[in-house]
Length: 271
Image (cartoon, rainbow, N blue to C red; front, side):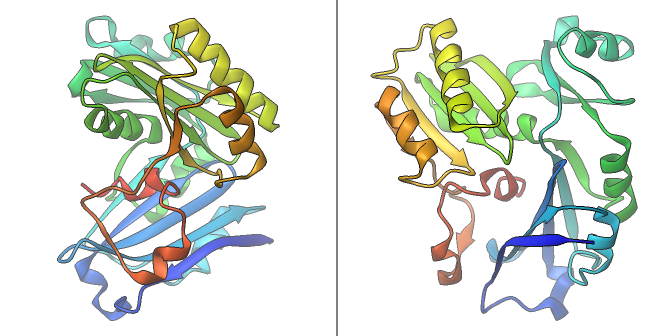
């Protein structure tokens, strides 16, 4: 099996012998697995690891002695999966698959998350393999879609303003937009090139009548300041900045090398 470690950061305070004091946060996608370990007493993020999945994810986890420990608490989010938002008054669990099939190709397993702040359900679909990983290795973890988590966090950041949030994954793009504190859009797109990212972003802004010169836009995820993706977006969206880490967590100096806008969806699991 071939895997590649993209990030591995360990704080000097991390003591795996005290694993019962830590929270494990895991992010599982079709092509990657990331996790971090957070001290429940100090709220310090003390360990981060990310793998690019080339083959068998079960082997990858079995070879990692840290992630398999019996932590005090744990959580899992699923990324890069088809989903759609349904208002509470229209939500019917029995018809979730039919609703999702209107916009996406679906897997056998359908789930939903309640977003109580906006009286909405997020319906999403999970491949059997990812579901098996979650229940085999993290059976007691709280589970939800990353899109649900991001919407909940961006609502808190929005403060009744007109903001857009762009979250870039390995091969997927998530755009969330608010106007006067109300959710206008949350949608995801698969992309192959930086031009795809720009196209989907401008298309969403045009449909929502968001002014690309003035709308406050925050970037998160797999993008670096000054790289080709950032430069291209900045040509067309002028009020664009990088997001920051969750303010309720602490990060040691070992994490200074990690851009603050990365792994937001992973760190934000801990509330």
